[in-house]
Amino acid sequence: MSAETVSETVAGVRTDRLQAFAAREAQRYARGRPKAAEALAKGAGAWLGGVPMHWMADWPMPHLPLIDRAEGARIIDIDGFGIDDFCLGDTGSMFGHSPAPVAKAIRRQARRGLTYMLPTEAAMEAGRLLTKRFGAFRWQIATTATDANRFALRVARAVTGRPKVLVFNGCYHGTVDETMVTIENGRTVTRPGLLGQFADLSASATCVEFNDLAAVEAALKTGEIAAILTEPVMTNSCMVLPQAGFHDGLRQLSRHYGALLLIDETHTISSGLGGYTAVHSLSPDMFIVGKCVAGGMPTAVWGMTEETARRYEEVNAGRPSGHSGMGTTLSANPMQFACLVATLDQVMTEDNYRRMRKGAERLAHGLHAALARHGAPWHVVRVGARVEFICAPGPLKNGAEAALAHQPQVEAAVHVGLLNRGSLIAPFHNMMLVSPATTKRQIDRLIASFDEILTDLFA
Image 1 (tube, one colour):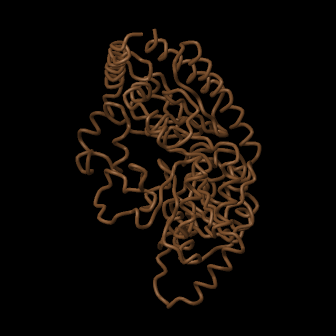
Image 2 (image 1 turned 45 degrees about the vertical axis):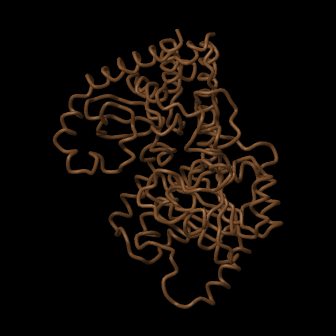
Image 3 (image 1 turned 90 degrees about the horizontal axis):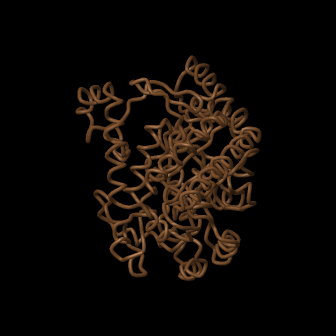
């Protein structure tokens, strides 16, 4: 292959073919959704940037669809399109939209009040179920995983007396400031593009590459690290799996150097009952999970081991009275507890996870087979019910490689092509989730659409 030909491809796809495909799919999408276009033209101007949350502008369609309703693993937009939903609220609705036990709990609690700033009997049951599902942690409730991670880091600093958190390049833990760092010429620096950032975040964080235990140990040797905050698998990027021995190494090193190990399972809860931590027998000092834990009701939980709780209580008993820097008024409201109990007891079950894993295996196998048929230099990764196709060879070993594997032009075209064929996947990367409500027909339809798109791109 000549240098000239190579320069005219992106992720193995000829750029002229990619551009033509993307233009056709954009036109097809726009023609099919006149009601959404009209409604946006009338009403979007009230919102900054035309959207109620800025990341909604990251969807690659010519304009957003407007959703009328959702049930199970399917959403219906106002133009009448029925869409197989593999995004599922970017994990928020991983068990399907409005699971029946959760919807029933919401109706029942709505008649009893929405927020009291006091616990309920359901709160007592939620604590029991959290321990049953995730392990013997001492729990607290937050509204988002961002808040839960932020509070957990505050506790880690308090009990260790150390200033810094160790995070991995390319990580995602919500909008926690300390995680918004990257590596530049071997040094931790603030990520570019952060709005209103005035502090040097390297003062509070050290960034190393995922799967690099030598770099982890070098950072811990400084004595500055209060906690390692990590996902078991790097997500919200091109997905990166841990290499053999990596998690055992993190646990051993953190104990040796006196740092706490924090596991954020907000995405890897897809792994199975109890999350990646339970499935792979990890032993964190603190455990965080959000998004789907209450069936889609905004809720996160964070827990600490008995030993960590003892250390926290000693520090907390000696501090002056006043603001702790943790907690929000609407967190731990009775609606959260009602939905937590319904989800943990009736939705987050081994039977549902078994169904999800089986469907995800089917999806991953079908996508991999399609890539092989077309000779596409891409690969597929699966973590439980979570599947991604990545527009580069793999496997990837760290955040730097994940960043290079991201191909926005190709991904955007494929996303719109899939939506035009009836399947929605996550906008920020190529993530797909299989819920208990997802059918074989929906999975096979997505595989067939993917194959059809590859036929066009790689013909």
